[in-house]
Structures are given as structure tokens and as C-alpha cells.
Length: 264
Length: 351
Image (cartoon, rainbow over all chains, first blue to last red; front, top):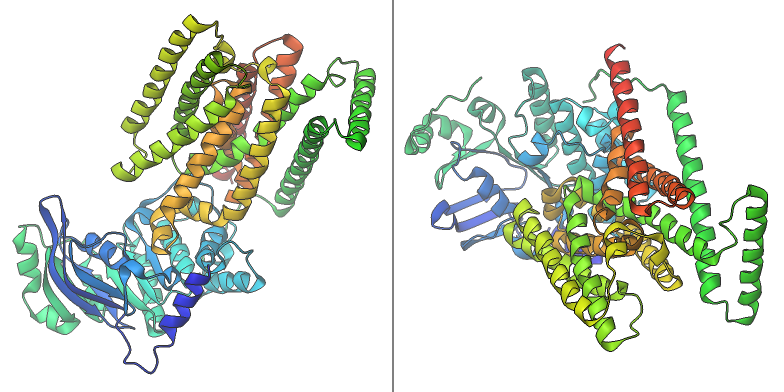
């Protein structure tokens, strides 16, 4: 995978230029058939930011995230990842993605925690054998998220919170500098959820950019440094204080007439 | 921020895990040794016209006679028996190997579909053979048609975004329908007996098809070793693999084409209708009790070999169809692993 290697070094030596944002979305629209899901969204996510992406159910949050990651192609507009168009972005190991699907996945596939975290090294290794260095990185990722003891356990035997940590560890093992999480704490008990968000905080302090989709608005306003509130269109993008003061929330949620409260 | 997380649920003591690993390693080494002997036989048989190899081949067959003498059997002195056993052993390795990815990719029925596509291929092979004459085994036609079928299934899946039931069912019945039409037309041209390919029959395994299976198996195992990491990642979390910029569609196509190849190679022993069982049942058994993905692959292959060994012994000694015998043994193993895993669950709950 020499392509990936060269793409990595390219994107890393942009020190002399002005630092490009982690994600740069310009005038992006996307529709399933005739139904617009994302409309004219322009949004910049700087490196090191902790962005909370909120909106009512069916507001296009997940679609917008998929567009950012290149899983979907926009109908119009453009998206850059670390200064490169997302369609030609090759340094996949820089992005750690925890999907809703992986969150829900109890799954019957027997995979140990260590095997799943090791997958974070696969984009680096390509077809070559994993080295001792890869093993070291995997072990330290397990340690960072505090699940070293669970390394040999099957992933589908873990609790929701522990499983989320394993997915985060996989992203850390791939040395991602952008972490995209789609409702990671669905079905996770309150205590584990708190400690999970403390973990995200400390990763963010280490300079990792975080994009978090979360239906619990309280969590987002507590943790995120910036908030984007969407319901097909972007209703608010700015720091947390300005969001709390604005009435973007009521507007966005009012637009589909859905219940504002999501607290359990 | 390492936090203390309760690990008291650990039921397996270290010594029992070690014992298990040791048993698995013995099983794998045995499988490897038997496979090596079988590949050696096929190679010697293939090249026996050459001077030195010819002598080695004679020695091999003499060794077979001694085996029969000591075991009181009437199996190992016959070249055709070795061909059948070799094909069986190779099936026992490659079918569960590919099956491990298919089952956990939730593509278990793909094997069944491709077998039916291959049936259309066998029909075409027979028809072409009866028209042109002397094409040899219809498996080559089956191989080509089945690979096209595999690419077709993948094409449908990419467009419908799923390996959904409906396109699969259409593909499965459609290719079988085409097969029956060609067979019925071909019977008019010349007598064709298709039952061996439907239900599996050791007697249709010839030197040529054993060689084909050997070459296919080596290629498939080499590709899986080379792309193991990519196949595992895609099987486990396809979206994350896409985000990591793996060429998911290419690897999916590779997996499905390898499935087609394995299905065609296995079809002569297992039959069109039963071939998917060998892709699925050993893997299902292994997944009941294994403690990781690598172990799942190891156990799948071991269970595959046990099914083949038990099935062939049953088929040869009792003159039964090979396909049915193998699948019945595989299912017996599967039931045993369910019993074993529910004992494990009980051990956890009474812990």
C-alpha cells in the first residue's frame, strides 16, 4: 500500500502552508431520489475541534457524516478532507469511524477484542505481515482506552460501553487524527457513558479531531467545543455558548414537529 | 486512563485453553500432513510419464499396497481411490476456509446459488461435449459459467446494495432452470446422466478433476493468505473498511469468485444440492465454540476434515453417496458443538 504511505506523508508535510481544516464542506446537497436529505450545507471543521452534530431523527446527520467520510457522494458541492477532495483521499488510516451499525452489532462473528483492534493496523500493513511495532501500537491503544484485560475476550461478549472502547482503540491503533462517531452510546449505561465521554475528552485534548453524532443534547453541550445543528439544512454552526443562547434548536426540531426532549 | 474492568466472567482456566490450543495444533498439523501427502500423490500421478517421477509413483502405490495389507482394507492400492480421497481432503480444507468469510459476511446462500449456476455450466459442458465431442470433464465449463455467475451476483449486490434474498433467489432458480432446459435438450442429442452432479458421486472423480481441484486449492489458499487482513476487515466491518479506503468491492468480488471456484471443485463429490453445506456447516460448528476469528478458521478446517474423513469412510465402506454421507457427519459434529457450547453457557451461569 505505497499509495497510502505517500498520501500520508503528503498530507503531513503541510507545515509551511496554512493548516488546512480537517473537513471542509462547501454547498453540499444530497438527495435520495426526490427527497432532499442534506441541502446547501457549508461547514468547516478545524483540526483539533470537538464538533457535536445534532438534529432530530431523519434530519440527515448520518448522511452528512457519510458524505464527509466518502461513503456517499454529494449530488452537488464539494468536500475536502485534510485539504484533499474526499473522493481522492487515500489516507484512510487517518480516519477512525465508529458506525451506528458497529454500535448495534452484537453479531455472532467470533472476533477477539485484540483482533478487532489489530484491524486498525491493516490499512498501514497492506499485504505485508504485521510487525512488532504494530503489536506494540495495538497494545498501547488497548491500554489507552483501559481494556487491556479484555484483549482475549470475544467482542460480542462485552458490554456496550466496553465494545465502544474497543472500536475507539481500533481508531487509535490506526493512528487516526479524525474520529467520527455515530451515536456511540446507544444502549450504554449512564456510568459507562460518562467515562466514555471523559475518554473522548482526553483524546481531544491530545489533538484528535472528533465529530460526534449524539441524540442526547445535554451530552453534546457539555462535551463539544462546537455544535452544528442540522435538519436537512444547517440551522446553526458555532461554539457551544452561542448555540445554547440561539433558538436554532427549537427551529431545527420544530421544522419536523418532533419532540425536543430525548433524555431518558 | 486505565480503569478497572471486571473480568471475573472468565471461565476458561489457562490450562484448559492451553490444552485446547494443543489439540487444535495437532489437528492442523495432521491436516497439513495429509494434504501434503494428497498433493504429492496428485503431482506424482500427473508426472508419472517422466522417468524418475515414474519410479516414485510406483513406490507410492507399493506403499499403498502395504497400507492395505496392514489395515486389512482394499482402498490404498488403487489410484482412483487416492484421487477421490485427495479431492475430498482438499475440499475439507478450502470449503470451510472460504466459508468462514462467507458465513460471517452473511452470504451463506451465495454458495448454494453458485452451485446452481455451476449446474447450468455442467449442462452446457455436457451439451457442448456431445456436439463437439472429447472436451473431457464438464467441470471446465462449470468453472467458467460459475465465475460469470459469481460476477453477476456481485454486480446485482452492488446495485441493490445488499446480498438480498430476492436477487439471490432469482439467480439460483434461474440458472437451475436454464440447466434443466439444456439437459433436456442434450438428452435428445445423446444420453446424459446428470444425477452424479446433483447428488455427488465419488466415481466421477477422475485424474483430471483431481488435478483441477489441486490447482484450484493451491491458488485459493495462496490468495486467502495474501488477502487475509483485507478479507477479515471487510467481513467484520464493511463500512469501516470503506472508510479505511480498502477497495471493498474488489475484495467482495474476489471472495465471491473464489467461492465459485471452490464450489465447482467440490461439486463432484458433494453434488450441486449439498455443496453449500460444506461451506456453512463446519463454520457454524466452529463458531459455536471458538474464541476468536483465527481459531474459527482453524476449527472450521479441522471440522471440515473430520466430516470428509467420516463421510468418505461411511460412503466407501457402505457404498453410500458421498455428498449425503459427508453432510450428515458434518451436521453430527455441529450438533456436538452445540451441546458443548451450551455446557459452556451452563458453566458460566453456575460460575
